[in-house]
Length: 232
Image (cartoon, rainbow, N blue to C red; front, top):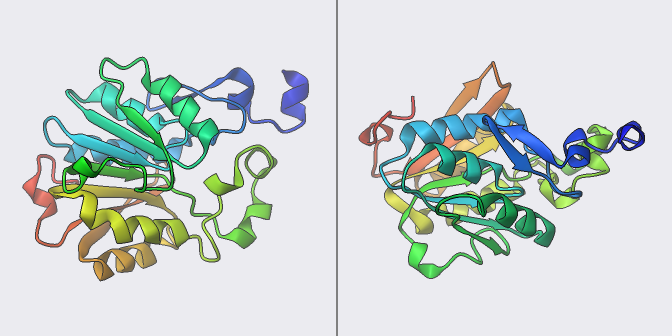
């Protein structure tokens, strides 16, 4: 284990688990390791979640977000997707222990989701890749050498995948649904602008404690205050 760590292998992949949101998340070799800053999505989702929410996590990786949220809310109808078969296997393993384990689909973003979810999703969560391609080589070796590039590379400006998520969101969101996406402080204004172009209202939520930035978006006809907690 020490030799693996010296080579740069992420500690979480060596141990086989990561701590996220107070829960132990199984991590397999080659799977994206959940970051603590992503807990800001979890906290915001807990605030705005309606009773018995329908939750979808895109680019789920190990499904850390889905597991932590379903473990803290009641009666969650849970779905997750990822394009990486290794991540899908790991996510299914993590969610199998839930009373209502939900379903994990292999495929690109919305593509594998069952059509009956269209217009029903209350919480659409995405910790999608948002590192600009040219910046990947500047990342620590734990990430650039041992995590899948598809989980990191967000294209030339880092927003390629986030824009695709935003473009498809309205079809899947319930009338009072919420889209929550992790991004960087410099990318957040462009992410909000992309939401507005797709008929979504949006605002930026930050946490100094977590060093995190999240864009919270909702259908333009709704108000963020229409749900318990208001997302503030």
